[in-house]
Image (cartoon, rainbow, N blue to C red; front, side, top):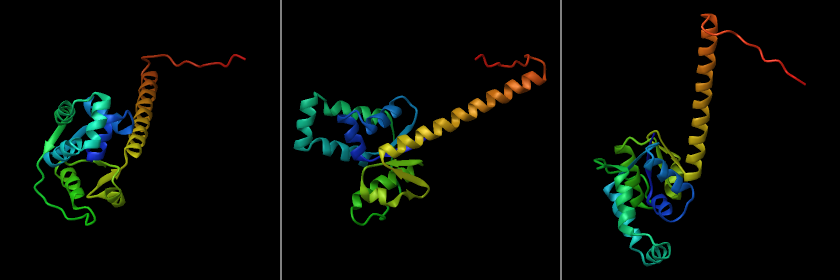
Amino acid sequence: MRITADTNVLLSSAFWYGDSFKIIEKAENKEIDLVLSDDIINEFKEVLEYEEIKEKIKDKNLEMKRTVEKIREISQIVNPKETLDVIKEDPDDNRILECAVEGKADYIITQDNHLLKLKEFKDIKILTPSDFLEEIKKTEEILNDKDMMEQIEESEENIKKGKIKEFNYKSTK
């Protein structure tokens, strides 16, 4: 599963242990692929230079350079070839779409209303961090159900072949 995270998700993950943090942690653990562009990384760097953000960095004893380097390290960096003009209200948001398209992302994760209004772009779902985590949870439940069904089918096949004996459970009340 491939995702592109908006700058606000990257920023939130650097300071709080919420949904954005959990998503970036999944990228660190290689459970998902994080696809970013130099434009997104550079915007993240710029935002970290804002005075109010510097104060938060100081309060939490974070090192800006390490945070940016860590994000870059766990990401696949793409260089979008296509320039889009989909979001008129905030043209900078088009950089997120360009990155997701170039990186063949399955999802864009954002808190940005301009992007969220689209809901989907070129078969890329656009979700909030909490909605994305909920979608992952549902997918994992489906996969677990499939695994369980495969185990049941395998057991039934082994019973038919005589490899294991059939057994019955009796209720003891």
